[in-house]
Amino acid sequence: MERTEMEVFLALSEELHFGRTAERLHVTTGLISKTVKKIERRIGAALFERTSRHVALTPIGRGLRDDLLPLYEGIKLAMDRAELAGRGITGTLTVGFMGTQAGRIMSAAREVFVRRNPDCGVRVVETQLSHHVAQLRDGAADLLLTTLPVDEPDLTVGAVVTRGTRYMCLSAGHRLAGRDTVSFEDLAGETFISVAESAPDYWIDFHSPRQTPGGRPIGRHTEPCTTYAEALALVATGRGIVPGDAQLLLLYRQPDIRFVRVADMPPIEHGLVWRTRDGADQRIRAFSDVVREVTPGLAVPDTLPGPRAGPSRGDVGACVGP
Image (cartoon, rainbow, N blue to C red; front, top):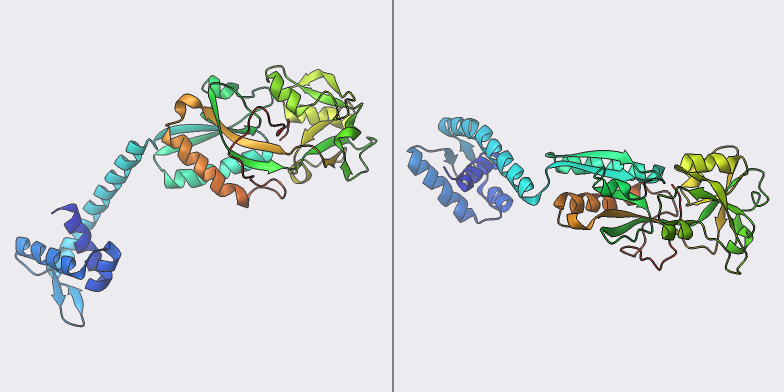
């Protein structure tokens, strides 16, 4: 029996109505009737009792249904697996995240992705400030959701997943800690927490500007940090300031730190990044689609996706941050 014949027979044995079966399979009732008669001629017995008001399986029809159903389901499963393999949705995909919000998004995306693609496993790993994009280059990750900008010749930046208002993390006793909003110029004379040298200069300069728009200097701490937790520990003791986005207010609260909005600095963006040579990997494309799908329901207020597809080196769009 051909697969199409199985589909017709099994659908009719469930619906017990020629019209509904035709609608379900997107064919005509005439084709359903013709296919059933063809099967019955081959078997030499009626499979359905048919009247103008009633359709029911005969005993032979019930037996055929019970025998065929597990076989058909096995064939369908094999075909689905072959299709997934043909699309490249197999194996294991390793995805990295920088910051708490990105971790929540990637973990949620994993659950949806694996449910839709059961033959492809997903491993979620953390990306620290000191890593930058090293995990992509050494094979520890296939896809990153990380703080932008990323401008590397061997890497591709995909969608901007979140874009949030810029905030500064200050110690509770800082001179600006009592204000709700400050300006970029108000940061003159402050000291940014330094990031490990493994991050490129363009990234560090965008994260921690060396001067205000008016040309007044902003310092940098001499002790580099490799993680955001290290940076916050220095901030808490009043040894510097560090930027972040609106997720700080909900996900990084602690009694010795305050968060102040910077009204006139560009927002912070987090985006998807992968190796350019892997651009045809359907797993990466499919997972990226799921990330964009789940983000609106998980992103904290004021860190929702923006309209742009990705950053460029000329955009002062991202800072060190969770």
